Image (cartoon, rainbow, N blue to C red):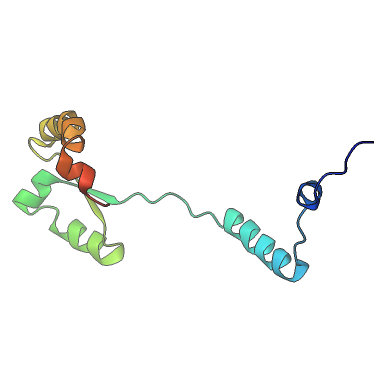
Length: 103
């Protein structure tokens, strides 16, 4: 005769009981969240030169007042600095101070 499985194994083949009073509203909210997916956000982009000469002042104030987010493009030396920082990141991450840091 084959021994019957323990009760804990027998329950694994049965789906868990889900209270429909909890499940239905959760499902509805999940479907609503999927349907209400907002469009991607694209911040106003302002050239660095416009900040220096003041020609973008109105655009900057308007963007900060509406969304509070502004992208600055054309910053002199930024591309080289970004490249240098990205190249140095692995060595920085391998230091004992970085390993001990809690993020």
